[in-house]
Length: 343
Image (cartoon, rainbow, N blue to C red; front, side, top):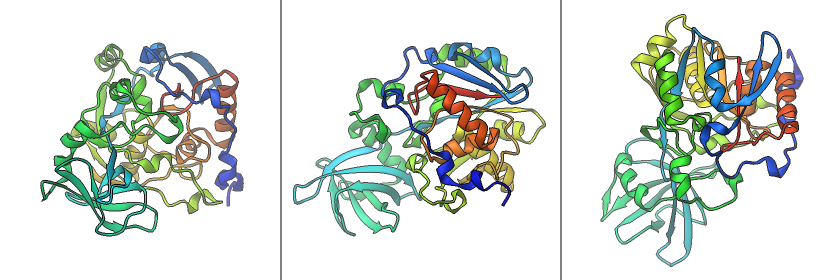
Protein backbone atom coordinates (compact mmCIF):
# COMPACT_ATOMS: atom_id res chain seq x y z
CA UNK A 1 0.00 0.00 0.00
CA UNK A 2 1.61 3.24 -1.21
CA UNK A 3 0.09 5.70 1.20
CA UNK A 4 -2.23 4.26 3.79
CA UNK A 5 -3.52 7.71 4.77
CA UNK A 6 -4.92 8.32 1.28
CA UNK A 7 -7.07 5.21 1.59
CA UNK A 8 -8.49 5.93 5.05
CA UNK A 9 -11.98 7.43 5.01
CA UNK A 10 -11.14 9.33 8.21
CA UNK A 11 -8.54 11.36 6.26
CA UNK A 12 -11.38 13.02 4.34
CA UNK A 13 -13.25 14.24 7.38
CA UNK A 14 -13.36 17.91 8.35
CA UNK A 15 -15.46 20.20 10.52
CA UNK A 16 -17.53 22.77 8.68
CA UNK A 17 -19.13 25.67 10.59
CA UNK A 18 -22.89 25.47 10.00
CA UNK A 19 -23.08 29.02 8.67
CA UNK A 20 -20.89 28.04 5.68
CA UNK A 21 -23.50 25.59 4.34
CA UNK A 22 -25.18 27.50 1.51
CA UNK A 23 -28.97 27.19 1.80
CA UNK A 24 -29.73 29.58 -1.07
CA UNK A 25 -27.94 30.27 -4.36
CA UNK A 26 -25.64 33.23 -4.95
CA UNK A 27 -27.48 35.99 -6.78
CA UNK A 28 -26.56 36.65 -9.50
CA UNK A 29 -25.17 33.17 -10.14
CA UNK A 30 -21.71 34.38 -11.16
CA UNK A 31 -21.24 36.42 -7.98
CA UNK A 32 -20.17 33.23 -6.18
CA UNK A 33 -16.57 33.14 -4.94
CA UNK A 34 -14.00 31.19 -6.95
CA UNK A 35 -10.83 29.66 -5.47
CA UNK A 36 -8.23 28.85 -8.13
CA UNK A 37 -5.42 26.41 -7.45
CA UNK A 38 -2.58 26.12 -9.94
CA UNK A 39 -0.83 22.75 -9.56
CA UNK A 40 2.30 23.92 -11.41
CA UNK A 41 2.99 27.01 -9.31
CA UNK A 42 1.12 25.77 -6.17
CA UNK A 43 -0.49 29.22 -6.07
CA UNK A 44 -3.97 29.91 -4.68
CA UNK A 45 -5.96 32.81 -6.14
CA UNK A 46 -9.23 34.14 -4.69
CA UNK A 47 -11.65 35.73 -7.13
CA UNK A 48 -15.32 35.59 -8.17
CA UNK A 49 -16.98 33.36 -10.74
CA UNK A 50 -17.69 36.22 -13.15
CA UNK A 51 -13.88 36.23 -13.71
CA UNK A 52 -13.78 32.48 -14.49
CA UNK A 53 -13.18 32.77 -18.24
CA UNK A 54 -9.98 34.80 -17.70
CA UNK A 55 -8.43 31.72 -16.11
CA UNK A 56 -9.44 29.13 -18.70
CA UNK A 57 -6.27 27.79 -20.38
CA UNK A 58 -6.35 29.07 -23.98
CA UNK A 59 -6.01 25.76 -25.83
CA UNK A 60 -8.45 23.65 -23.87
CA UNK A 61 -11.99 22.36 -24.47
CA UNK A 62 -14.77 22.58 -21.90
CA UNK A 63 -17.04 19.59 -21.32
CA UNK A 64 -20.43 20.32 -19.72
CA UNK A 65 -23.03 17.95 -18.27
CA UNK A 66 -26.43 18.92 -19.76
CA UNK A 67 -28.56 16.70 -17.50
CA UNK A 68 -31.77 18.26 -16.23
CA UNK A 69 -33.06 17.80 -12.67
CA UNK A 70 -36.56 16.36 -12.43
CA UNK A 71 -39.01 17.11 -9.60
CA UNK A 72 -38.16 13.78 -8.06
CA UNK A 73 -39.66 14.31 -4.60
CA UNK A 74 -43.26 13.12 -4.44
CA UNK A 75 -45.72 13.23 -1.54
CA UNK A 76 -48.47 10.62 -1.52
CA UNK A 77 -50.49 8.39 0.73
CA UNK A 78 -51.20 4.72 1.26
CA UNK A 79 -54.75 3.45 0.66
CA UNK A 80 -55.06 3.42 4.48
CA UNK A 81 -54.53 7.20 4.49
CA UNK A 82 -51.00 7.20 5.95
CA UNK A 83 -48.74 9.92 4.46
CA UNK A 84 -45.65 8.80 2.57
CA UNK A 85 -42.74 10.46 0.74
CA UNK A 86 -41.02 9.00 -2.32
CA UNK A 87 -37.75 10.14 -3.92
CA UNK A 88 -37.08 8.94 -7.44
CA UNK A 89 -33.43 7.86 -7.66
CA UNK A 90 -33.03 6.52 -11.20
CA UNK A 91 -34.73 4.62 -13.98
CA UNK A 92 -33.40 1.05 -14.18
CA UNK A 93 -35.12 0.41 -17.53
CA UNK A 94 -38.31 1.56 -19.29
CA UNK A 95 -40.63 0.57 -16.40
CA UNK A 96 -38.55 -0.23 -13.28
CA UNK A 97 -37.72 2.87 -11.24
CA UNK A 98 -35.34 2.79 -8.27
CA UNK A 99 -36.64 5.01 -5.45
CA UNK A 100 -36.26 5.77 -1.74
CA UNK A 101 -39.42 5.74 0.36
CA UNK A 102 -39.91 7.35 3.78
CA UNK A 103 -42.34 5.05 5.51
CA UNK A 104 -42.92 1.30 5.74
CA UNK A 105 -43.98 -0.46 2.56
CA UNK A 106 -44.05 -4.02 1.30
CA UNK A 107 -44.19 -5.52 -2.18
CA UNK A 108 -47.57 -4.68 -3.65
CA UNK A 109 -48.10 -1.50 -1.59
CA UNK A 110 -49.77 1.29 -3.58
CA UNK A 111 -48.65 4.89 -3.08
CA UNK A 112 -51.34 7.25 -4.32
CA UNK A 113 -50.39 10.72 -5.56
CA UNK A 114 -53.70 11.90 -7.05
CA UNK A 115 -56.94 10.48 -8.45
CA UNK A 116 -55.21 8.63 -11.31
CA UNK A 117 -51.44 8.56 -10.68
CA UNK A 118 -49.92 6.01 -8.29
CA UNK A 119 -46.85 3.81 -7.74
CA UNK A 120 -46.77 0.12 -6.87
CA UNK A 121 -43.84 -1.34 -4.92
CA UNK A 122 -42.30 -4.19 -6.93
CA UNK A 123 -39.09 -4.97 -4.98
CA UNK A 124 -37.42 -4.17 -1.65
CA UNK A 125 -33.63 -3.89 -1.98
CA UNK A 126 -31.06 -4.63 0.70
CA UNK A 127 -29.55 -1.13 0.42
CA UNK A 128 -32.82 0.50 1.53
CA UNK A 129 -33.93 1.49 -1.96
CA UNK A 130 -37.14 0.19 -3.55
CA UNK A 131 -38.16 -0.64 -7.11
CA UNK A 132 -41.57 0.70 -8.13
CA UNK A 133 -43.78 0.83 -11.22
CA UNK A 134 -45.80 3.96 -11.92
CA UNK A 135 -49.38 3.87 -13.22
CA UNK A 136 -51.83 6.41 -14.55
CA UNK A 137 -55.48 5.30 -14.77
CA UNK A 138 -54.34 1.67 -14.36
CA UNK A 139 -51.90 1.88 -17.29
CA UNK A 140 -48.25 1.10 -16.49
CA UNK A 141 -46.08 4.06 -17.50
CA UNK A 142 -42.67 4.17 -19.13
CA UNK A 143 -40.16 6.40 -17.31
CA UNK A 144 -40.30 9.15 -19.95
CA UNK A 145 -44.10 9.27 -19.56
CA UNK A 146 -43.96 9.94 -15.84
CA UNK A 147 -41.72 13.02 -16.32
CA UNK A 148 -44.48 15.46 -17.39
CA UNK A 149 -46.63 14.25 -14.46
CA UNK A 150 -43.91 14.68 -11.83
CA UNK A 151 -43.14 18.08 -13.32
CA UNK A 152 -46.71 19.06 -12.39
CA UNK A 153 -47.00 17.48 -8.95
CA UNK A 154 -43.43 16.85 -7.75
CA UNK A 155 -40.97 18.94 -5.74
CA UNK A 156 -37.38 19.94 -6.46
CA UNK A 157 -35.20 17.32 -4.67
CA UNK A 158 -33.00 19.70 -2.69
CA UNK A 159 -30.10 17.92 -0.97
CA UNK A 160 -30.83 16.86 2.64
CA UNK A 161 -28.34 19.35 4.15
CA UNK A 162 -30.31 22.33 2.74
CA UNK A 163 -32.83 21.74 5.55
CA UNK A 164 -35.70 23.74 4.11
CA UNK A 165 -38.63 23.11 1.80
CA UNK A 166 -38.13 23.79 -1.90
CA UNK A 167 -39.67 26.97 -3.31
CA UNK A 168 -40.44 28.54 -6.71
CA UNK A 169 -36.92 29.99 -6.96
CA UNK A 170 -35.38 26.50 -6.73
CA UNK A 171 -37.21 25.38 -9.88
CA UNK A 172 -34.90 27.60 -11.93
CA UNK A 173 -31.90 28.01 -9.61
CA UNK A 174 -31.31 24.28 -8.93
CA UNK A 175 -30.86 23.80 -12.67
CA UNK A 176 -28.03 24.81 -14.99
CA UNK A 177 -28.82 27.32 -17.76
CA UNK A 178 -27.90 24.65 -20.34
CA UNK A 179 -29.86 21.74 -18.78
CA UNK A 180 -31.72 19.87 -21.52
CA UNK A 181 -31.92 16.09 -20.87
CA UNK A 182 -34.31 15.19 -18.05
CA UNK A 183 -33.34 12.48 -15.60
CA UNK A 184 -31.14 13.77 -12.74
CA UNK A 185 -32.28 13.91 -9.12
CA UNK A 186 -29.36 16.14 -8.10
CA UNK A 187 -27.89 19.07 -9.99
CA UNK A 188 -24.35 18.99 -11.39
CA UNK A 189 -23.54 21.86 -9.07
CA UNK A 190 -20.40 23.36 -10.68
CA UNK A 191 -22.70 24.20 -13.61
CA UNK A 192 -25.03 26.28 -11.45
CA UNK A 193 -22.59 29.23 -11.45
CA UNK A 194 -22.96 30.00 -15.16
CA UNK A 195 -25.30 32.75 -16.28
CA UNK A 196 -26.76 32.57 -19.80
CA UNK A 197 -24.56 35.43 -20.98
CA UNK A 198 -21.34 34.02 -19.53
CA UNK A 199 -22.03 30.51 -20.84
CA UNK A 200 -22.73 31.89 -24.32
CA UNK A 201 -19.58 34.03 -24.26
CA UNK A 202 -17.38 31.12 -23.17
CA UNK A 203 -18.87 28.81 -25.81
CA UNK A 204 -18.11 31.39 -28.52
CA UNK A 205 -14.48 31.67 -27.36
CA UNK A 206 -13.62 28.06 -26.51
CA UNK A 207 -14.02 24.62 -27.97
CA UNK A 208 -16.75 22.85 -25.96
CA UNK A 209 -19.18 19.93 -25.97
CA UNK A 210 -21.87 18.29 -23.84
CA UNK A 211 -22.37 14.91 -22.30
CA UNK A 212 -25.20 13.68 -20.10
CA UNK A 213 -24.80 11.98 -16.74
CA UNK A 214 -28.08 11.62 -14.86
CA UNK A 215 -26.91 12.32 -11.32
CA UNK A 216 -28.43 9.96 -8.72
CA UNK A 217 -28.94 10.53 -5.01
CA UNK A 218 -25.94 8.24 -4.35
CA UNK A 219 -23.80 11.29 -5.04
CA UNK A 220 -24.57 12.51 -1.46
CA UNK A 221 -23.87 9.18 0.22
CA UNK A 222 -20.88 9.42 2.57
CA UNK A 223 -18.28 6.66 2.49
CA UNK A 224 -18.97 4.46 5.51
CA UNK A 225 -16.25 1.83 5.00
CA UNK A 226 -13.04 2.39 6.97
CA UNK A 227 -10.99 2.04 3.78
CA UNK A 228 -12.28 4.05 0.82
CA UNK A 229 -11.67 1.25 -1.69
CA UNK A 230 -14.28 -0.88 0.15
CA UNK A 231 -17.03 1.63 -0.74
CA UNK A 232 -19.60 0.28 -3.23
CA UNK A 233 -19.71 3.08 -5.83
CA UNK A 234 -23.16 4.01 -7.14
CA UNK A 235 -23.93 3.69 -10.84
CA UNK A 236 -25.44 6.37 -13.11
CA UNK A 237 -26.59 6.45 -16.74
CA UNK A 238 -24.42 8.45 -19.14
CA UNK A 239 -24.45 9.42 -22.82
CA UNK A 240 -21.53 11.15 -24.57
CA UNK A 241 -22.35 13.27 -27.62
CA UNK A 242 -20.43 12.71 -30.87
CA UNK A 243 -18.87 16.17 -30.48
CA UNK A 244 -17.66 15.34 -26.96
CA UNK A 245 -16.33 11.96 -28.12
CA UNK A 246 -14.32 13.68 -30.87
CA UNK A 247 -12.70 15.98 -28.30
CA UNK A 248 -12.02 13.12 -25.86
CA UNK A 249 -10.43 11.03 -28.61
CA UNK A 250 -8.13 13.94 -29.56
CA UNK A 251 -5.11 15.41 -27.81
CA UNK A 252 -6.99 18.58 -26.81
CA UNK A 253 -6.61 19.38 -23.09
CA UNK A 254 -9.96 19.12 -21.27
CA UNK A 255 -11.47 21.37 -18.61
CA UNK A 256 -14.24 19.32 -17.04
CA UNK A 257 -17.18 21.29 -15.67
CA UNK A 258 -17.94 19.40 -12.49
CA UNK A 259 -17.30 16.04 -10.88
CA UNK A 260 -20.16 14.45 -12.85
CA UNK A 261 -18.59 15.30 -16.22
CA UNK A 262 -15.25 14.10 -14.82
CA UNK A 263 -16.60 10.71 -13.72
CA UNK A 264 -18.16 10.24 -17.17
CA UNK A 265 -15.06 11.25 -19.13
CA UNK A 266 -12.79 9.07 -17.02
CA UNK A 267 -15.17 6.08 -17.14
CA UNK A 268 -15.24 6.42 -20.93
CA UNK A 269 -11.42 6.62 -21.06
CA UNK A 270 -10.74 3.73 -18.69
CA UNK A 271 -13.54 1.37 -19.78
CA UNK A 272 -13.34 0.79 -23.52
CA UNK A 273 -14.59 4.17 -24.82
CA UNK A 274 -18.28 3.27 -24.80
CA UNK A 275 -20.39 6.29 -25.70
CA UNK A 276 -23.31 5.42 -23.40
CA UNK A 277 -24.14 3.04 -20.59
CA UNK A 278 -23.68 2.89 -16.82
CA UNK A 279 -20.77 4.66 -15.14
CA UNK A 280 -19.64 3.71 -11.62
CA UNK A 281 -16.10 5.02 -11.53
CA UNK A 282 -14.58 5.98 -8.18
CA UNK A 283 -11.69 8.42 -8.56
CA UNK A 284 -9.37 8.88 -5.58
CA UNK A 285 -5.63 9.50 -5.02
CA UNK A 286 -4.75 5.92 -6.02
CA UNK A 287 -7.09 5.93 -9.02
CA UNK A 288 -6.19 9.19 -10.69
CA UNK A 289 -7.76 10.85 -13.76
CA UNK A 290 -6.16 10.04 -17.11
CA UNK A 291 -8.00 12.34 -19.54
CA UNK A 292 -9.24 15.39 -17.63
CA UNK A 293 -6.59 18.11 -17.30
CA UNK A 294 -8.46 20.78 -15.34
CA UNK A 295 -11.48 20.66 -13.04
CA UNK A 296 -14.17 23.14 -12.01
CA UNK A 297 -16.04 21.94 -8.93
CA UNK A 298 -17.83 23.04 -5.75
CA UNK A 299 -16.84 22.31 -2.15
CA UNK A 300 -18.08 18.90 -1.05
CA UNK A 301 -19.29 16.98 1.99
CA UNK A 302 -16.81 15.39 4.43
CA UNK A 303 -16.04 11.72 3.69
CA UNK A 304 -17.74 11.97 0.27
CA UNK A 305 -16.57 10.32 -2.95
CA UNK A 306 -16.61 13.84 -4.48
CA UNK A 307 -13.98 15.11 -2.03
CA UNK A 308 -11.93 11.99 -2.82
CA UNK A 309 -12.27 12.82 -6.52
CA UNK A 310 -10.84 16.30 -5.82
CA UNK A 311 -7.95 14.61 -3.98
CA UNK A 312 -7.34 12.44 -7.07
CA UNK A 313 -6.31 15.66 -8.87
CA UNK A 314 -4.25 17.37 -6.17
CA UNK A 315 -3.42 14.69 -3.59
CA UNK A 316 -4.83 14.29 -0.08
CA UNK A 317 -2.65 16.87 1.66
CA UNK A 318 -3.30 19.64 -0.85
CA UNK A 319 -7.05 18.85 -0.81
CA UNK A 320 -7.00 19.24 2.99
CA UNK A 321 -5.09 22.53 2.69
CA UNK A 322 -7.46 23.93 0.05
CA UNK A 323 -10.51 23.09 2.15
CA UNK A 324 -8.92 24.62 5.27
CA UNK A 325 -8.20 27.78 3.24
CA UNK A 326 -11.78 27.88 1.91
CA UNK A 327 -13.17 27.57 5.45
CA UNK A 328 -10.84 30.30 6.71
CA UNK A 329 -11.88 32.59 3.84
CA UNK A 330 -15.57 31.87 4.53
CA UNK A 331 -16.38 30.19 1.23
CA UNK A 332 -19.92 28.79 1.02
CA UNK A 333 -20.06 25.00 0.76
CA UNK A 334 -22.09 22.34 -1.07
CA UNK A 335 -24.67 22.51 -3.87
CA UNK A 336 -25.55 26.22 -3.69
CA UNK A 337 -22.05 27.15 -2.55
CA UNK A 338 -18.92 28.61 -4.11
CA UNK A 339 -16.55 27.08 -6.64
CA UNK A 340 -12.97 25.89 -7.06
CA UNK A 341 -10.95 25.68 -10.27
CA UNK A 342 -8.01 23.26 -10.36
CA UNK A 343 -5.51 24.10 -13.11
